[in-house]
Image (cartoon, rainbow, N blue to C red; front, side, top):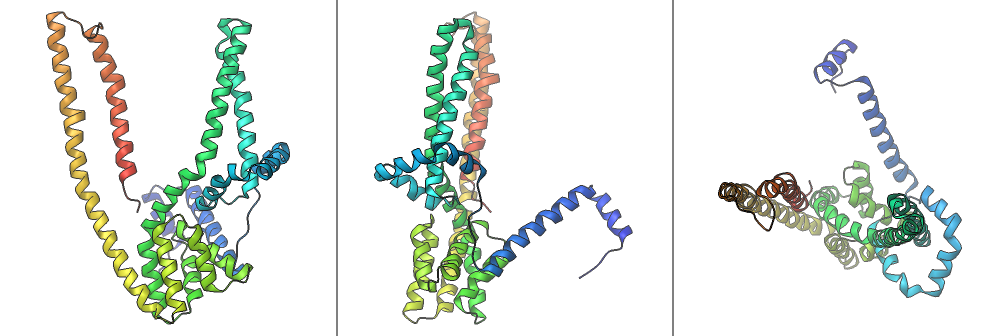
Length: 341
């Protein structure tokens, strides 16, 4: 490995426009990440850490949350399932406490904010409108908190799917070296490159090293709770191969080839879809607005109105409101459709 003198380091940092604080921050971040990975590998398992919001919520609403779960288990059954699949490292009842706490907090905050906003309606009018606004904020907060785990499931499944081809390729290479199956998962964790898949592998390590499960049982357990159907298929295939006495090395090699072929095809499809998106953008957000503005200019010369509004008002709304919103919406759509690297 090449080494640099202090003078050369200063020169290169100056050329790259890096500050000493940036370099120290980067080194500290990488060191912390490496320490976390080494801790997992050394212990062989991970544990939940304290969540301060959960601690505060439990202090105020724990008894209500526990009573709600005990009396109405079916009411929170779907939430508990989504919480497991989402990868949120939190106990289910603690999340219920957070849900109740945030809902109550949203009502209080929304009511106070509503009263301040509607003060010009008088005291009674402001209080009534404030309560209505508080109820709206409470319902919105509760809805978003309840559905937050289900929102994460789709995102995690997509990220795991994008990491999986390279993970399988690494697993195939490790298996080809003759390493035992559990070492394959340890080496994946050691790389520290696959954030989402590493979360699932940590669960496997917990089952094996903390709860004493054998590897196939651990793989089956994680397969039932992973949000990714592709990762579930991989784990179930590994279980079937190990239990039937098949060659795990051949299985992973074939899966790696299939995964990389699918990865290339999906990237190719995305590039082709960008051509279609560019044509849509050109037609709807470049040509159509120009044609609309020309039409408005002609109507303005003739002295007419449109929908009872002056042409200048319509042109202003279209230019400063509608077009920017359409462009932002299109950028968001393209970003959502873009496969993650």
